[in-house]
Image 1: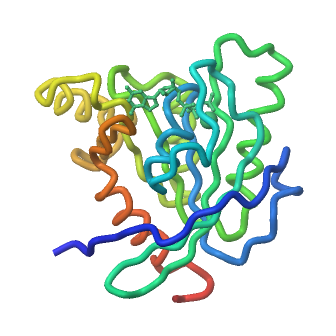
Image 2 (image 1 turned 30 degrees about the horizontal axis):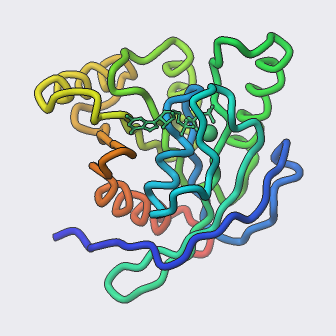
Length: 211
Ligand SMILES: Nc1nc2c(ncn2[C@@H]2O[C@H](COP(=O)(O)OP(=O)(O)OP(=O)(O)O)[C@@H](O)[C@H]2O)c(=O)[nH]1
Ligand SMILES: [Mg+2]
């Protein structure tokens, strides 16, 4: 029986333009990656039960910095503090070449060097097949960090179509069947399970504190 995981506290910590300027937070960290406008900031807000903690916009490319938050998960009476990072989206169609050339290394440097990074939540739009950039990113993360793929905006599909879409996303990314999780930041669907999975990830072995 999965634990009922709730969020006791959450706050914004700092923004940074590169991993070298990231706050020194001695907590297991989980980050949110995915193409621009996929719903990373919305998912983070829904996860934390806060409407405006991370900035959301209809305009792709809203998040241009690494944004760090802390939260306390509450499960079975235990309080588990974690760090969360909202990353800028990749593959933003209107971004200039110069911007893209800056973003990709910024994200890769973060994923490679952030010491306490214990898991990556990679978001894809439930309505679309993964893009080559998504596949690239999954290939790049796999083997480096634990990965959880989530399909956002699930409220836009019927239950039946969503099932097929999840399987197509898993196949497209070369992931095991039923490993992807459907989310809707609009309705809150999937977030109980996301909180459970994130708690597991933050407690998994490999966490240097061993707690
Ligand atoms: N229907 C629906 N809309 C969503 C959902 N999640 C996000 N959106 C909308 O999608 C748009 C982009 O959301 P953001 O959370 O800003 O996306 P992002 O991935 O952080 O975007 P960047 O910061 O530009 O990379 C906004 O208009 C959101 O309201 C969802 O689950 N369902
Ligand atoms: Mg964002």
